[in-house]
Length: 245
Image 1 (spheres, rainbow, N blue to C red):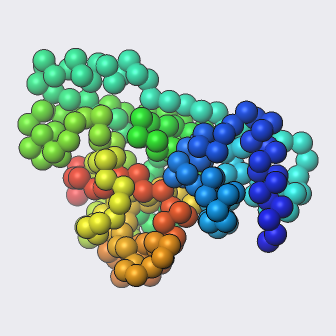
Image 2 (cartoon, helix red, strand yellow):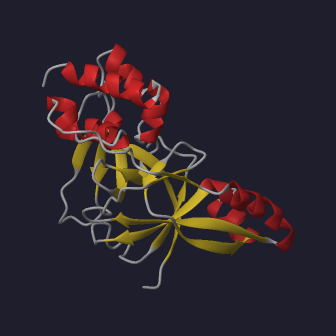
């Protein structure tokens, strides 16, 4: 793969009126990803390029080889309603807190199936999702004493698949703390691995430069794999779960 994709990317960014940071955030990558790729020669993995192409409404084939007809419209951007955030703050008087369940089925096997719309939150995360699936109301004692977080820091995801058995079961709802996006110390995180949103144990590969992350399942039937830190997007750290099993 030559560097012509960089020229195509810059031209399409100019056509859509996007700067490097805006495209990085829309694609669900780190804020400096596009700048580092274009100006410093870093990055450029196929999963990351696919995210950039989709964020522009184009295909990976167009980005790396220039093969595509007229551009389609970029994905619809959907954002959390700030009025809901305001109601969460006001809800303190009732002694309860409201948190969101995002309508992305977090795959503990092969991953949730991506869709064409994106939900963005105030922490810079981009979720492939149609909408907010549900609102959870929890006593403040649970938020503070168990999850140790403000409600705006927590999102809820459904688990599918069996790769985290017996730690997490299919149908569990996991509470993810958006403040923690560095896998140190290692632990369970929600992440976008380029194909879907998954729940996995993450471990930094010591000595790797640039940093690589080992992605581990609890179920030994699933082999661990590695990815560059720029190839994944860590949404947040596991804070707790709700289970019916």
